[in-house]
Image 1 (tube, helix red, strand yellow):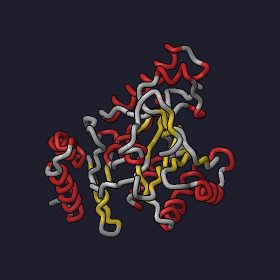
Image 2 (cartoon, rainbow, N blue to C red):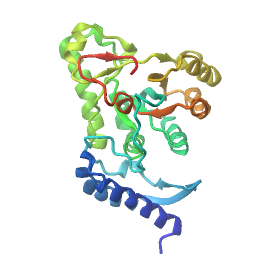
Image 3 (cartoon, one colour):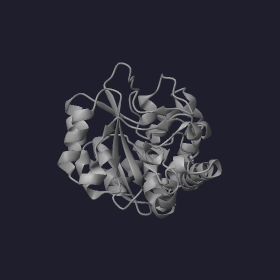
Length: 282
């Protein structure tokens, strides 16, 4: 007989699917697919653990989590209230250069705080971290394109730029069934030639924690808070242990200052957010 925690976890997720079905939004069309995905998801679940009132599934092998079709809007198995960032103090946490060996720990932290993030991933890293990427998709985070191997796009030919973008799109789609709909150019480097080749929004940042440089969790938090304003995009890197360690305190202090943490797409919802354009903040 399944354990009580396992049954509760299954019921919790199925209730979310039923909720999505009743929403009447574009995501409704994805609800039946989500139901099939849930069945496969829990077939590979070894147990569930409780964190407060939330049931968090433990999956024995995340690489076996089935891919899902990309919904028109973000698919979040734990539905959240819709956020209006025109009226709410919103910031977006973004993480570059992963996934890596610390990404799973970061996802645990974000799950405990019920906070979404946007991950700008390198295509060359995707194959080794299918489990982490599937967790991102299932747990409601946004998947972003950071090119295949982090070469500055301004020094490449048009064909090379297209290959950097398309190879990463293909890798993420193969791993999750989702296609990233924003791009972060490496180093934030772009010019008019690059802009004309990028059909998705290019997302830069206005808060640079310099976490890759100093590797100091406290300094990462202090720099982020000193620069953050409503509509800000915070740049961090999930390939550094020190950056991941900064996240719990950063989230705590942002929430204390009445910020709502959202994905990049949520941050720009209701604005003219389109391709061939670079954005540093809402």
